[in-house]
Length: 356
Length: 249
Image 1 (spheres, rainbow over the protein chains, first blue to last red):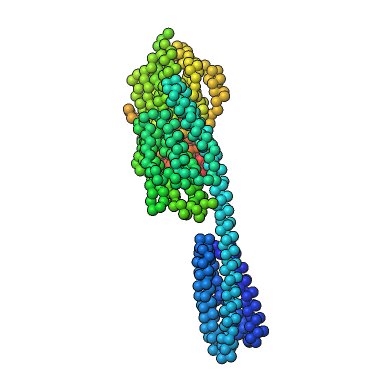
Image 2 (cartoon, helix red, strand yellow):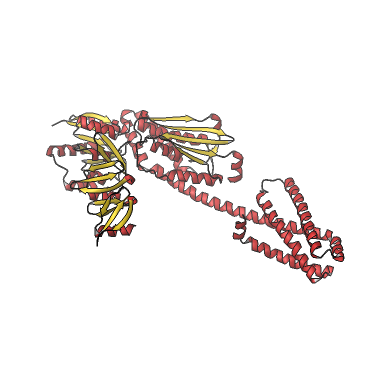
């Protein structure tokens, strides 16, 4: 945090501002109180330094109090308290220090006591100015962060849009599906028609999905099923799909096409590469307000050396991070013959505050 | 007309159905069997001794190409696949034809006719014809991820990173790896080309070495160096080979 302050070059600016205030202080004290040179300088230094140090504390208070989430009363109450505490500490410490420095000089201490009200009032004014500036800075920083995050998100979405486009045009999936259709036109024309419709519907969704809005789990599942049913026609009885998702989870909002790469991956490493039966299990559970969706597949452990690009999974993780602004939303578990990817979707509240 | 015994190898049932359907119109063909992966196919080719096989490329266990490498006296082969990038390799392996899915009955009959001509003349397709087939198909110099070998009745699949080095032995090459030594009927040139981007270097006319397995390179004589591998093997370099090695390391 402090390094960030230095990096932002805010600290030197902050110090310079306090130097100016100290100079003003010095001038006021010498002209209005007629204090001696040395004592005026000491006073300016002590009062400014103490306030400046307290100000750093205020900076963090402002930065981490997340004022966007507080209502007006809470905010007023907080600053009333913090300003009173600040004034008390500021004046108290400065008073004690000045007592020591001046050697408890009687006339000076009397003057100090007499001017307490005006000092505290100007202190309050400084407090207000400082906190206002801090709020502006924090707000600005947040805005910038949000902007870069949104930019990155936009880029990623374009990328995944392209990827999904490519996924559809991926020759093996499209041509193998067309080959199945070609075969079914002879052996089972009705099923052929059914598959043409499924393939079209799946491709239409994949080609047209937009990233600027979230999709319901229900919608996503519908399209995942289309994809899985197409693969089922291709591989027949040796491909088994299990789905365990409660009705109550269906309205949950998730990023569109976020599960598709996981399921494609499961199919690729599962049924494409595994002789005999192969399964893909999709399940959803609610865990302390978070929705956890798991995509699990078995694979042939005796199949060494086949590469997966891994980019599909990496992109999913990137997208999860960009949408929710949190890490560790994906967990991969690999056992001897099964592979599972679990995505964790934060509760709705946190979604509202981070996704705009 | 002699009757052709045919085997259909594909992991997708509808893909097998359509081939079977097309073939059922041909009186001169008997379907000897169908299989859904390379292991099954290997067994069935040995038992049923087909004249012609329809072979998919991407399948569980071993690919169509890997299957071919394991056959000592392969039948005529017609590849059927959705991928166009394997075509050149298919013809290099002396395939009769390469059908891109989905294909028509007419196109399949053409391929079968071609196989018949070949079987009757007991020869290979004339060079000219291969060139014609090759044109219009593009090849992406494809890298190997793994190598399959036969160990008695067992099939060993060796990931390329587990290969220590490959040695030329007359018409064969010997593959030294974690899972033992395996003789394969391939050329050094073949492995040199397909393993180039996998970190393999031809350090000598008779040795292709996995760079990741090198422990040290020591001076041996005036112009030669000795490559010491983690497995303990010590292999001499040629001047040319040493130059290649230095460029990469």
